[in-house]
Image (cartoon, rainbow, N blue to C red):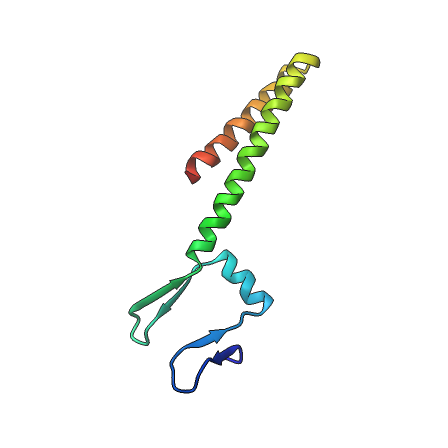
Length: 103
């Protein structure tokens, strides 16, 4: 691999510099390192995945609160057809299910 640089000739430490494609893959996946005989050695990327998922969940929760506030304002100031209100309720119910699965 051309993106591996040894830190010092006498040590076994090295630095792997990821290209943009590899970094994107790292952010979306967990990389496992196995020995030649298949023995599990290490996982890389699990923590960043958890962090990204937590951030996305927080964003989704914030958007839900905003959507709920908007629905309340609409209900107070605008008369919507029953089908539109039912559709918004179904949407909120589905989003809540997604959040519950992630927690």
